[in-house]
Figure 1 (cartoon, rainbow, N blue to C red):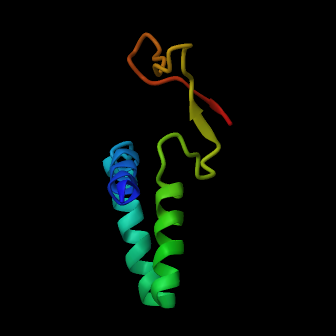
Figure 2 (figure 1 turned 180 degrees about the vertical axis):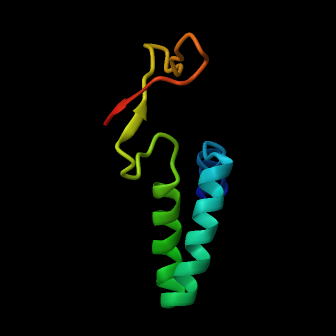
Length: 86
C-alpha cells in the first residue's frame, strides 16, 4: 500500500528536474508519436522529444560554447560568447 503513494512522489520529483524547453519537446513528441503510431508511438515520441531537447544537447551544428570549470559561458571583451568546434 505504501508503494502506491511512493511511486507518484518519485515521478513528480523526477519531473521537477525537467526544463520548460524539455517539457515542450516531450509534449510535441507525444502528440506527433500518437498521430503516427498510436499509444506506443506516444511513449516513444515523448522519450525522444525529451531527449532531443535536453539542455546541453548538440544537434549537429558543430559549434559549442566555451565554458569555465563552473559551467559559465565565457565571453570575449566585446561581450560575445566564445565558441569552439565540437
